[in-house]
Image (cartoon, rainbow, N blue to C red):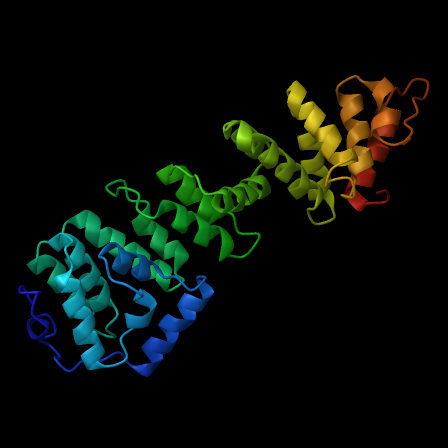
Length: 313
């Protein structure tokens, strides 16, 4: 197995090995769920192999031999080729030792082995287990945006722990708009204040977009006490002058004007910032009355209740 350039040496334990139908079916299903691109596909492309979806998984022993030949003939460094072969060996049912033995015999660097272990698990939908490997400090982030995106989009919509755990641990640079949007949706669902502060670090091009996405996420949340609490948290954040204007414009003239609680939010924001004179204008005539000895307490409770149960739009 040390001479990985020869197929019969690499698969000495079973030279006629071929992927079983069950294994092939699982891989194809995983690819469909991953927007038709697995991480092994990306690895094969980095080696210069074309149309990886057509050559992996191999359907026969001969196709596996052909795939091995293409990997070996690649101009990539040996440890890159060995990493892909290590991945293929992990595909073999009940042959866990084949992959680990191979890694030991070719002295595959630990960081490559850990990375392959992680993406192999990602490709099989074992996200939590995968992150045990992909958040190891020894790793240089590879495919970080793709990892963030698949964690954000292929978990339960209310599960924000794993994508945020990866993001905060690895601190990858995110430049893709779709990945930024997917990640921010998880940030906004997890913490209103953290998402607000994060939006300010995105530069002029994305600041307003992220801010409006936060407002939309908060007011589109499931009806109940949690939505009311998060709405109040958002309304009391220290907006800049620009953010103040964006908030008002988004909830009056923008895509947020039909959001649940838009008028109430503008009214409460006016109260919180001491701009009572602007309430009627911003909230479209929503009236807040002060009562002797109570100030705005009763009105505040009524507004919060409306944000909770959605009695006004």
